[in-house]
Length: 190
Length: 283
Image (tube, rainbow over all chains, first blue to last red; front, top):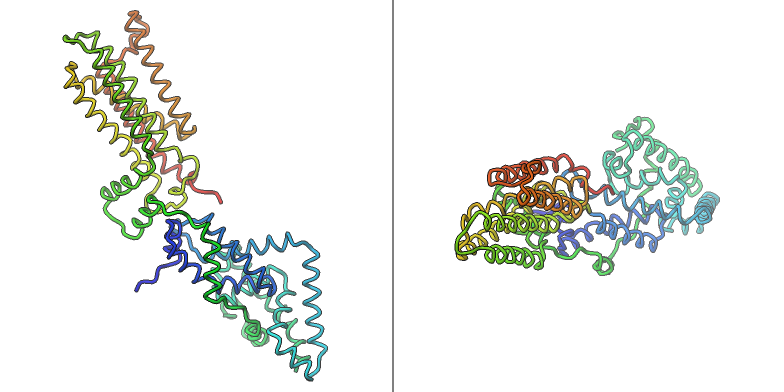
């Protein structure tokens, strides 16, 4: 059976088709939640709120012109909402988050190969989360889109509305910073 | 992946361990119940089922021939016209017919026909004015159809709505024609020209002005201008004013006005294509 494209489903949603809406939401619930979850540093409740707001924006601002692509547009809305949230949350929250990230990194780096290290290693990706949180927002977004969401470079450029060269340079800087942050931790754990 | 983004092979080896570690941080996967809950929370924002939007979507999925397609769009556009539009238009025609028939006597002299013509010349464009305002009221407000910018372009939608407005007016005109024949009015063809040609002119003028003004203002200006011409023509006839004699309408001049109306309509439809970017949403 022919699987409807995102754009076809969106046209259905705009015509009030509930089935098309359910299909579209089911298709994007997990990936978009995952994206927002990683973007906001692992806060599931906040990610779910942003997810809901993103889909509300989709319903309010929907479009379907010839060249329109749903996926980049959806992620543009989600990214902008996350950015707005960071701005409105203010400096205090960011500082708190940075402190928490640094604390995690410090604890991991200082630990030896004893039971404490095993417990920390078992903690779900806390090192990676801390490392990603430490990245600047512009680098975190491209890294998450590329390596968690599987976006092509072109799709990232389209989503963030930046040139392809900027995508490449941000990815390059982001990965180097990740390597620098994660390498000492790895050495500390091992 | 790394090569694609321009990372040198020797650097890739250094980046790879960090890259592989990204998988250590997994994101939560929403359950089916989570998705259903999300759908329930969003249900209130889902657009209501609209026959126009539904038809646009169906047409998008199953393109059909241009004439049939236009008629199909026309059929769906009918829902934009409320019952009041059909009733008021019919009422105006009915009042016009009664006025014309009451002016008709057993013998039809030139004076009687002139009186009948004035009634028809005033009532026909009023229908055009009403139909234009109703059909094109959303053009300046980025209506959904324009936002969608799907296969029916604003040009096709404008054509479809003109088909409705003019089609209904022609139908009313035929009914009026029958009423005039049954009522014993003389020279029915001339009377019909007096009704339909100004109607075409006012529709064309109103739509042309609507490219710069709101549709309500454009329709009012077009109809107001026509009434002014009509009044001046009547004064010129009554007082035998030479200076204003050019404004006295004759059948050939009315046909000319109708042709001018058609030309204005064609210009508007062509202009719509050029104005397309302004009709699109800016968000």
